[in-house]
Image (cartoon, rainbow, N blue to C red; front, side):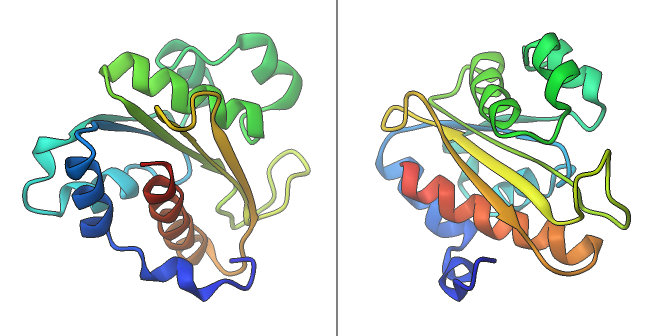
Length: 163
């Protein structure tokens, strides 16, 4: 994870506490994590005070249909792209009526996807503090499970920083 082991120190409870303290709501748009981020957030008692919902848009066409990601962008760049991640975050906030939207998209493996290496991940967040979005590009090591788990850890860190 870019050599920063501090990323693992952000817990879902830290994020939920910060969202509640800031009186903000959140929604998740997940591709490669398949709902793991939403599950982590909702594992915290009291998360219903800030968690609006989530959309798992694993199939590329659902990124457009459910999240409003530009069809031409998807055709041109594919689903694993920084701008796609940003539009996913914005789209889920709009779809769920939340203050904050966070998204994950990438290649968990075991094989590359359209020439994109396993472990290539984009995490994006849209919030009142980050109106135009912040996107983190990652090159994560490990197998499918490790890539997905590390993505959730980074997403929690990115989300906390945006609150």
